Structures are given as C-alpha cells and as structure tokens.
Length: 259
View 1 (cartoon, rainbow, N blue to C red):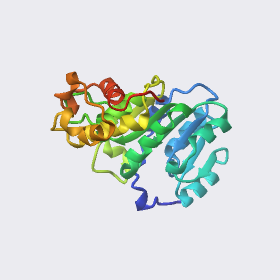
View 2: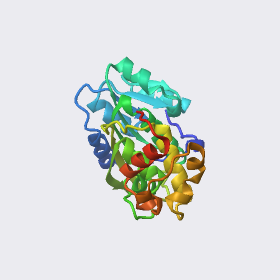
View 3: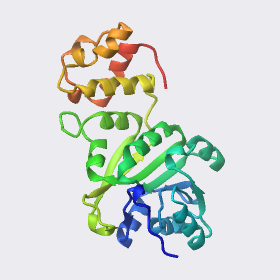
View 4: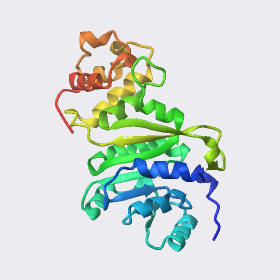
C-alpha cells in the first residue's frame, strides 16, 4: 500500500537509515519502557523504534497513515488522534509509569506540541523531537542572544533541553527548505515554587516589549497586582535575565507559591 501524507500536515518524512537509527538511539529508554511516537506518518522511524521497544505506542492523525501502519506493523499499538488532544496523564496511568516520547514534529505546529509536552511534564521522562533548527536553537538559547526569548525561558524552566544534532534537509522527502535538528527534553526540573501560568504571563509580558526595561514592560501586570519589580531587576531588559530570575520576578509580582 502506498500513501502520500496530506499537505496540511506540514511534515517531511525521513528516508535516511543512519539518521533514523541515530534518532531512535537518542531516546535512551530502558528495555520495556513505555515509548510513544508522535506523528509516525508512514513509519520509517516507527519500524526502528518497534525493534527496540516492542510495546511502542504511535499517535497519528492521518487516517490513511493509521491504516498503513496497522497493515505493515501489526504488532504496533496505533492510536488515531491529534497529538494536541492527547491525554498524557491518562496514557501514563494506562502504562503504569512516566512516558518517553519521540517524534518528527510538523513545522507549523511545533510550538503548540512543545507547550503541550511542557504542560504534561509530570507524566513524561524524556522527549526526543525533531524540528526546524531555528526553533531548536531558541530552546537552548542563552541570555544576551537574539534567539533568547519566551520559548527559551519557559522551556529551560520546565525541563532540561539539549540540542543533540543537526539533520540535513537532504534526508527528507519531500525536501524542506531548512535544516532540522533533534532536541532532547528531560523532564526532571525541580518544582518552581511559583504558579506556572503566572510565570508564563510574566515572561510573555516582559518579552512582548523586549527593548523596554522590565519596570516599563511589566506595567500591564504590576498595575493590576500592586506589586513592583524589584529595584535590582527594574532597570534590566528581559534578554539579560537568566531563566531562574523570571521565577524570582514572578514571585515578587504575584507573591505566593505554586507548582
């Protein structure tokens, strides 16, 4: 059976055995671990993963791809659905432990998928995901760089991102216009001690006007809460702060503690 992925998926499929093996090896899950592949498509990576993890679960939105996977890999647990609708808590409970995730993320929904994984961090151990290199570099960016921003801070506070390796556009079909990269997200970050949604709001508001000092850029929040940006931070711009400083900033503005 031959299928073509829907263009709306925005996904390019791997055709290089060496890259496939390299990604599968990067999962680093122990034997018998509950591994979940998101967006397997026609199953090039899936076949390699299934050899390593016989209890592999695959989540695929394209009905034709689901049918293809069920025919060609009968031992695979294929779940037909959108990864953004996945109930990670229920899936982890079903498997009896935290999950290991792997996948080639469609470019146009990379950020929503990343944020959904961050939201599910209590139910995940590690995610190995491929994405556009430009986005991967933002995940691991450091202060005082152009790539450092909202995605950098939130990701680094809620997990440990590591840029593993680049992937040439020549190993895909159809061939994309950009280089990709594989990133590992390890979900062993400590409790922040602040409300995550308040932290996210603080980070977004600060970077929405990144050329302004925090005293000015955070006025939409401070005018509501009555708290003030501490003097030692007030004159700085958001791109100069380490991720941990945004936790202190959130605590100063909102008070209290959270998960």
